Amino acid sequence: MTLATLKDVLQPALNEGYAVAGLVCLGWEDSRAYVHAAQDAGLPVILQAGPGCRAHTPLPVLASMFRWLAESVDIPVVVHLDHGQNTDECRQAIDCGFTSVMYDGSRLSLEENIDTTAQVVELAHKAGVSCEGEIGFVGYDNAEASARTAPDDARKFANSTGVDAMAISIGNVHLQQDKKADIDLNALQAIESVCSVPLVIHGGSGVSSDTRTLLARSSNICKFNIGTELRMTFGSQLRETIAADPSVFDRITILKNTEAPLRDHAREIIASLGPANRV
Image (tube, rainbow, N blue to C red; front, side, top):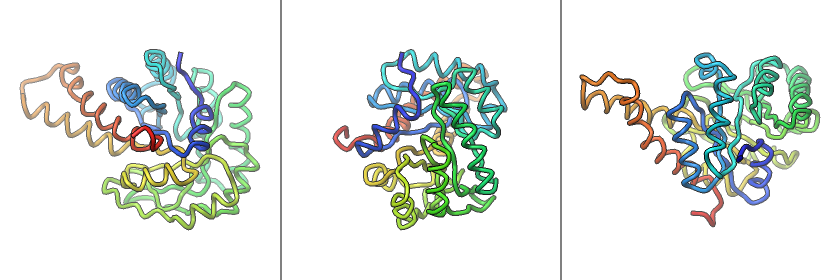
């Protein structure tokens, strides 16, 4: 049994100077590829069910699938709810067997975000589950603009909620494909100077691999959420498979061909964030 909480994997990362990949899952093929990639690398992984995934597949199904995959390997696997929209959704995830939940109150006022996040933290901790929160607002590429994380707000948020991990906005954005995110290192250092909670970068696909490795090994950023980058690999392989044989129609045949490229790509990401002595 290798189920782990977010705290289980992020505290060692914080203490030893590395980060853990939070990989956004959409179905069986990518989830299995990511777990096998982590097993290959000998490093922990966080399987994340985001809003899009949950709209397609019910939480109980996702929880069972992720937990089954965790039991099939011998590295720590976190079963994580990403961007939980409200306390009821977080409660349902906990009841279904998720070992970690993220409550996203980033669109609320600071006070409302703190109050509701603290409620989810209490709910999670009573069940032996970890909780991630977000302070500031991580925007979306060519859509909603970001609101940078203010150090004083980060300090108050961390101290008042008791979160196990804190997502911050320092130049990272969701759904960015070109890896040109301009990470504000001064802002990161200012946040680190006032709180010691493990930090999370959402929109990690928009951050270059070299920058991710640097931040993983030299800062309190202990978790990078990666989704878009891997979905691009999936889509590319899917198109290649169909183009190679336009007569192919079997779902399993088509989707099976995506797993090896996803596994290879995910293994590179996981290893690049891991301890320097493991490379």
